[in-house]
Amino acid sequence: MPRHLYGPDHEAFRASVREFVERTLRPRAEQMLEVKSIDRDIWKEAGKQGLFGLDIPEELGGAGADDYRFNAVAAEEVAAFSFAVSSCFGIHSDVCPPYIVDLGTQEQKERWLPAMANGDKICAIAMTEPSGGSDLAALRTTAVRDGDHWILNGSKTFITNGYQADLVIVAARTDPSKGAKGITLFMVEDGMDGFSRGRKLDKVGQEESDTAELFFEGVRVPDANRLGEEGMGFVAMMQRLPQERVGAAVANTAHAFQILRETIEYTKDRKAFGQPVGSFQHNKFKIAELVTKLEVTQAYVDDCIQAHAERKLSPVDAAKAKWWSAQVQNDVLDECVQLYGGYGFMNEYRVARAWRDARVSKIWAGSNEIMKELIGRDLGL
Ligand SMILES: Cc1cc2nc3c(=O)[nH]c(=O)nc-3n(C[C@H](O)[C@H](O)[C@H](O)COP(=O)(O)OP(=O)(O)OC[C@H]3O[C@@H](n4cnc5c(N)ncnc54)[C@H](O)[C@@H]3O)c2cc1C
Image (cartoon, rainbow, N blue to C red; front, side, top):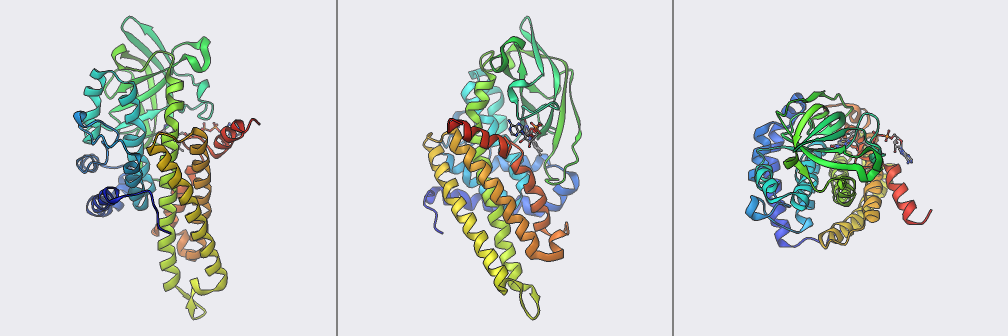
């Protein structure tokens, strides 16, 4: 089905991202799986290619694109290659920069954004804690003022890019008596005393992404590293979650589409009982259903991309796009595995890894249940 939201500039950018994927990412696909992370030189190459600076003003080393459709194009192309790489790049380029661009002082912007745009410094965002991620307002990491510093204590878990990150946006409690209004954001930098990381977490999928636990033991963070006003961290996170969620929806849909396309080709070649497996009526109808489901999902996600580009996307619509696309992605990939038969269960086949990689989309960045909670609340329920 033709898509209407992209113009020639977006398609030209798509061609350059695709070229980057083929030149830099695809030859390293196996290596990334082996080392369970994305090597620094790949980050730098992606920075050179202009993948990381879309939300960063030109005078600070970015593209200053100010058009979310470019972010969506980058996410689509990278997710079609690897859902894991798109999550790592997405956190660094799509989720983190707006915090610094919107909330940072001029000095903070100059200190961090150019190095993020060119891929020299990798950024992560740490909200989730071992005690819970859904109930963000209940987080326990503390930051206590000590003159012109803050002393951070606590831990975070499941942090994408956590193992490699040079910069981590950390949500911490600065006032225990104020609930959600007692949370503040800090930029913790690699090498600060008391800041350490656990091993790369052993996940069921997404081997290429480094996901880690982070520990803060009496870390002295200068007040100059406080991001935004004291007590405004929770509001800042809530305001920026729609971008994270529409980005997730874009990646979910692109990833499922790509694997479905590959599956359709497979079912044309693979024969059983003397005919292509895709030509059995059951399979043909199943594939017809999957294509329809994805195209309908794409239409809704496209509307959300367009709305976000015009700064009109509501948090509730972003929540709808996120949970629905995650559900569809998982349904589609499960059927794709089925269509591959036994090969679909073999790790050497992309479809098997894609199926494992996708499972987390119903959990992270606000689980499907939390998305439905937000939608239900909006309905006055
Ligand atoms: C691979 C990976 C990468 C991640 N990357 C990051 C990252 O970069 N930064 C970061 O901060 N976090 C990250 N996360 C954490 C992720 O956002 C959390 O796992 C998620 O928000 C859920 O929190 P939780 O795991 O503590 O589950 P819990 O909050 O313990 O929830 C457990 C279950 O209860 C359900 N539940 C909870 N509350 C309700 C409710 N009110 N109504 C109905 N059901 C409910 C949940 O939906 C879930 O099914 C990542 C997680 C993974 C697995």
